[in-house]
Amino acid sequence: MKLYVDKFYDFLARPLFKSSRLVLVGLCVPLALCFTQPIWRISMEAPQYRNGLYLDIYTYKIEGGNNGQHLQEINLLNHYIGMRKLDRAAMSDLDWLPFALGALLILALRVAAIGNVRSLIDLLVLSLYVSGFAFARFVFTLYKFGHELDPEAPVKTQPFTPAIFGSKQIANFMTHSFPSIGSAFLCVFVSGVVGVTLWHLIAGRRAALKEQQRPLVVVSPVAR
Image 1 (cartoon, rainbow, N blue to C red):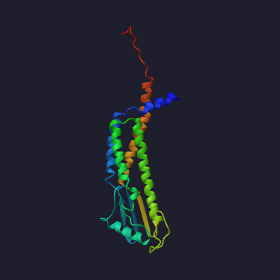
Image 2 (cartoon, one colour):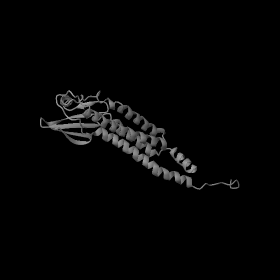
Image 3 (tube, rainbow, N blue to C red):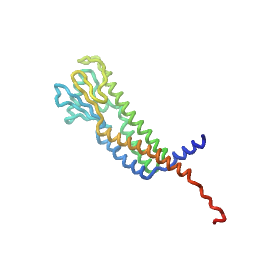
Image 4 (cartoon, helix red, strand yellow):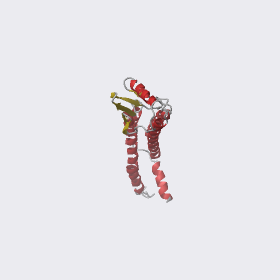
């Protein structure tokens, strides 16, 4: 058993393929673009808003359509049912996200430069954790917005969970919530890291086994 454990740790210490390092560097491009594009869009339609209202959520700000006018309209409507104002301060639960993505970017470049299989697996685990935790915090934030309603609001309504992924009818509004291009960039990065890790776990392991099975050539003193 100890022999297999030692071999596994030896495998984890193997350097990455040159092609894998280049792929990791390339994956840093879509990760960096996450900062420039919205990661989520929430929109709504109603008879009095035939053209609809929408807002885009970035890693560092919230931006409404029509030069911010849509966000003001949405906050006005939310006020009537007692929902808190939608702004970056209200969604402070996501303040950690830019720093987490920046840390992933630095770690990915480090792994590409001097990393081994162990550091690649660490990058994979952290990438899955950050993306999963970010989505969980986003869901929790929307849940709080729909359940922590002001009891003194002009319009009384039952607590609700806003649309998280897909469409949902709330009163006379049809709301839509879908990931935007920033989330697609993050998905490309995470999927790429998963692919590179699987490649090393399969092809890298095969290469390690071939090296271990390679016969040892002993040169006798007479032959010298």
